[in-house]
Amino acid sequence: MEPARFGGLLKEVHMAGALPVLANEGGLSRYLDEIRKFPMLEPAEEFTLAKSWRDGGDRDAAHRLVTSHLRLVAKIAMGYRGYGLPISEVVSEGNVGLMQAVKRFDPDKGFRLATYAMWWIKAAIQEYILRSWSLVKMGTTANQKKLFFNLRKAKGRISALDEGDLRPEQVKSIATSLGVPEQDVVDMNRRLSGDTSLNAPLREEGEGEWQDWLVDNSPSQETVLAREEEGRNRLSALRDALGVLNPRERRIFEARRLADDPITLEDLSGEFGVSRERVRQIEVRAFEKVQEAVKRNLATRELPRAEARA
Image 1 (cartoon, one colour):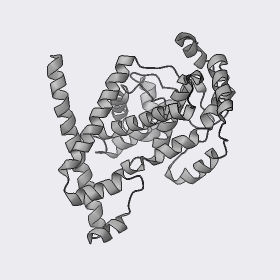
Image 2 (cartoon, helix red, strand yellow):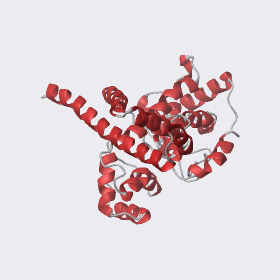
Image 3 (spheres, one colour):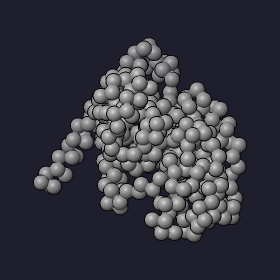
């Protein structure tokens, strides 16, 4: 199917059934129980469903392709819990990546959807994490943190998903619902408006449509390559930044922030012979040092590129 027809089709397809929504950290067990109810697909069945969706726009087929892979998203998302971000947001970003994979999957290539979707899921989650780390003033105020984690959901609830500046009435509505100043809403929206790939937010349960989740906003190949390079640079900058930590700081930082299964403060306090509060202080200080080092490293990497363009 030609890209133009494919994009037009997506705008006409409505959700065949509501998907489970992970509202917060406390609802993780319930969410995992819900997604386990969706059966896995046999290769032949997956191939037939993918063909039905690609060739005929079968929304029920697309829905089954997505629900059968929600466990894959959850498994991948759990590997990123050490970054200190809400697991509900990480899972939601991974689900967006899964939607993108289903939209683009070609069953005739000969590989399974899970193999293809894994890249999209990881890319969506990593892009979200990198945005979190790279915001210069991220976390300096409660309002900024609240806006960063909730703005896109708030925009989705009032059907303000288009890129660009919000209308005054939309700004007012979001500011009121989140309890933040209107100017903060405007500023954060502009800071995040450039993130157009893999960023369609999940809607509240029962309110979403496939057109919200599967809009055809594919970036150009040049944009994709540029973002991949930027992502590699940022991850490299993060690895280099760990060098600013002394051995104890690095051990605590990696154990608390980067490990798949973070070690408790109590265990680390026993390992180093200090109080839990002291471990927490070292963790916070190490995070601040790494964050500053990442910014410096990124600035250093950008300078030669800027000079080359000049």
